[in-house]
Image (cartoon, rainbow, N blue to C red; front, side, top):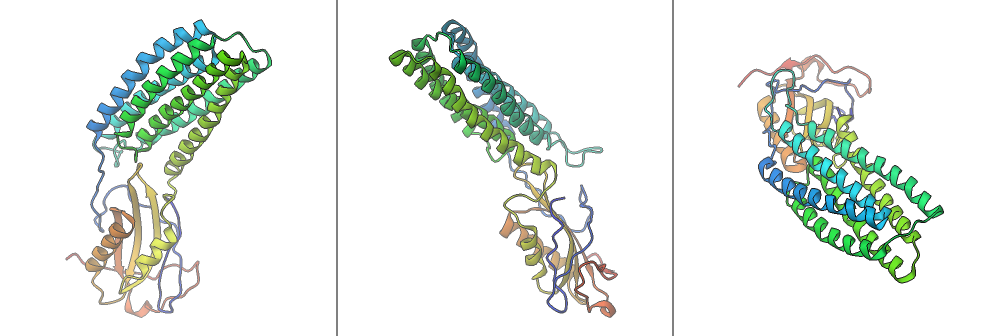
Length: 342
């Protein structure tokens, strides 16, 4: 899982690291914080479905006009709207899968389906950018005749439709990479229509047909930026890296600073799905320390300071004859005396 950095404290005020550990997929009984997965799937589905209806309806009209006007900008907008529609459909399917309860071998359910959806959205943006770059270059070399007036009016209508679709998606839970992926598709399409409108106006006023292809290249740059961001963020989750806004070293140091804690090792921080960070660690406390009270204090600290509520903390006593810990990084932790149940 994300990060093997271990903030620890020993009798000399030094730090030590533990060997890599395995974070349990399900509650192991050593202290599980609340499982707050606060997403409103039903509300999100309604907003995404409305955006889907707007996009697919306008896309059909745009394809016809784009062919009639011989405009790559409009045809590329229509192709982009097709990926918008696919992204929203994928997001809706992923939401339905993610809502299924955990069972069998899927101890977290199918929540990662949302992350796979975000990966697909990011990849489709990059692939579409490659195709549009190729077409744009061809048209810059040999520009065809473009009906500028059709491009302008269709692009203006597209701006209105995409503003409405973007507003619908903004009402959904954008902390989900799944929804964010669909939102980025629509937002890029909105930028594409603005560029198309400008290009069409240039063609009408000056007859400069290459403006159509240049507008497409502007949109390509936006697609690459959005696609890369989605692949980067979803990739971190799939590789179980620590969330970008959480530093395992700082978290470990904070846990080690809890009174009566002798050592924290095998600390792992990762993300189950977007907006759901998780943490596991093995904690050793000094003889006489209240394991259960310390675990509760740690869970409170993690919840209040880092919004981490999905925790698995194994808390044990350090045997009194091995309390004096070495600070050598590769030493193994001393044998622990297990805490009894309250």
